[in-house]
Image (tube, rainbow, N blue to C red; front, top):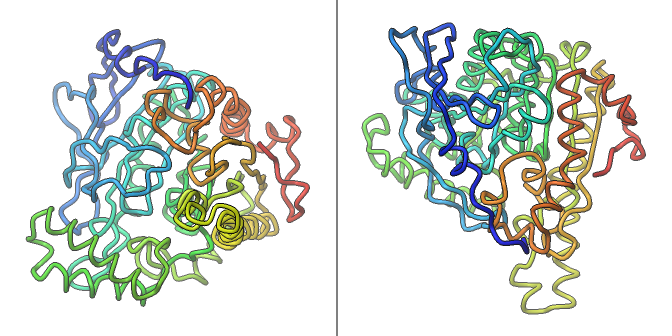
Length: 459
């Protein structure tokens, strides 16, 4: 971005924060009240032994502190892809099942509730990261926003019989949604009006949860931002290959190995599998169909079809998703004219194959099954950047502040004011959808998606 980084909002907020006590079902939390919002950080919703199912958090006596962020799932160092800039990671530990909650007030109002599931290829990220701060959404929409930290990588998704059952990260997310249902009213929210919003692997998680019977009653609406549905839901054979390489690389019982060794083996196994398949975009670790709680693919499809009639969906992609990984690469740098054209051609083809076509196809199938579906595409970002409307370019339109995104190459050539203004219509659409559902989008001029290209809303 072209403007000088502003003083970080979180620094200003910390100086102005006042203590506030919030009583939820399990006990009393001490959070912070700042700039018209109540913020609770590091709110534990469950605990889990390594490779064990999550256990709901038990009630506690006294006052539990909720002013500092909770730990994040152990994860590898930040990836070399820095298109969105570098993120803080935070303190890592296996005690990472916690929430960040932002609400206008923990009162008796029944506000809409948004639950945010971050991306990161099922191996990195945290809902508590600064770049995912939800203050703008809570303030502009008078909504409660809950951001989820859950287990990632091998700790969340290793499928190794006798060691780890797999899909533990999905179970974590379901437990977080249960906590939201049980406590929303105490946070000023409406437990009957929950919208789950996910991006990238977070959106892929949402698609999985649509076909999970125990998850479906926990939300009313969903927003899928850039789900990589062209990669499928995963498979038992693929997860088996990953587990084999992981165990070989680790060379000891993963139930007893130090975290540093686990993460190192996780990385090496992922590279082994990518080298074998020649396709490095697909996450090595992720949900496995036919493993609790996710049905096999036919069962998953039957489940979301059966529940589609009472479902409202917004889904979409950015115009140049794969530019996040490929733009301004070695071909275009060394052969400026022909290389750039070749690079753009690969980006367009891969974007259609991995993101655009599968997402719209899923939307069409949901609509035919009875869901009310709306589709969008992010088109016009960063015209002077080689990345333009790439994967993750939707995120600063919704989340974070200038300081969190100041070093993002994908936003080159834009001021933060321009980014915030571009995001205004997106935030307004998401917030109106969370508040009043499909009818609100129709009133805003959106046409329900039925498979036709002229019914895709452009931003």
